[in-house]
Image (cartoon, rainbow, N blue to C red; front, side, top):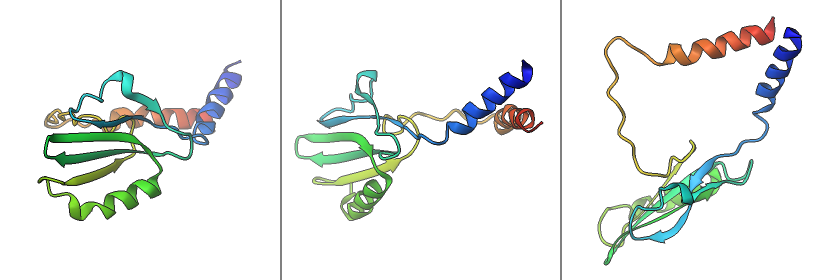
Length: 136
């Protein structure tokens, strides 16, 4: 029974890499950064839209935001193509791409790391234990 549970768990975890889906905020041009709330969260197209995109446009009436799912190729081409127009001044257009869930939302302040502690071993330990269980 224990072996069946372990094999099933290992199979589910190994199979999870086949379908990649990311969640992003999506909204058309808004004047305020208010499209970073739960009603604007969308599931991007599996294995096609693998990045989130954020556009910041500076217009005469204020700063406008456009957020969406994007394919990595299209997003990276757009962001590099508009890099020269990303000045922060009037008529500025800045496009950024990211590939973690909801990364095109508001910037979150990172907590200051405490001296002498690291979060990596805490995350690494369960993963390494699971690998050992799957292998043995």
